[in-house]
Amino acid sequence: MRLLGMVVIGVALALTACDSEPSGAENSSVRGSTSTTEPSSTTPVALPDVALEGTKWVVESVVSGSSVEDFARAGSAYLIIKKDKVTGSTGCNEFSGLAVRDGSTVGLGLVTMTLVGCMGDTARLEQAVITNLQTKLTYTITTNRLELRTPNNQSGLNLRAAR
Image 1: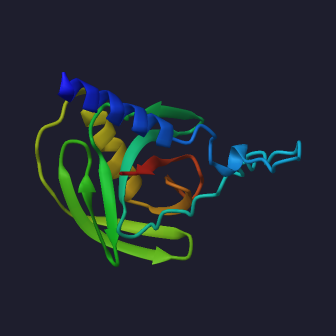
Image 2: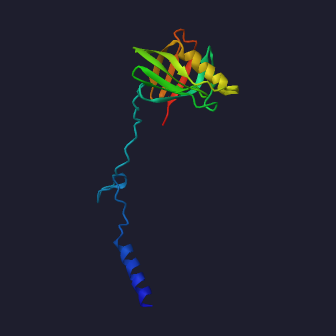
Image 3: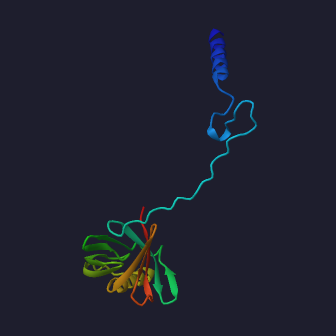
């Protein structure tokens, strides 16, 4: 019985010690005044563009003429550019090669690639990746998105930075 009494007294003391008024700046008020401080409006903050070099860029879709085909689920095709080298995967085979940057263009030359047989969408994705990487491409980065386009802008790859 004595223990129960001590617990009740302890809870009562804890409750009376709590402040019933919110102490945040959003609800603060000055005594005798009717004005309150409203929460500040949130202004969207622009995120910086991800760097081309050193980022793992995952292929999401392939551009061919006026059509865009989604390949996000076909395989995990990606590329990483570091200085004058490119490494990655077509979604089926791994590759490495040379990378040459000149302003907003990048030329990627595949030097080595594994030779695993691919089928279905994975084979089509691989073909699109290889075809696009064999030409000089214009690149545009917007936040975490990379667009690679052929000089005539008729084909290319849409990629996103991996997290």
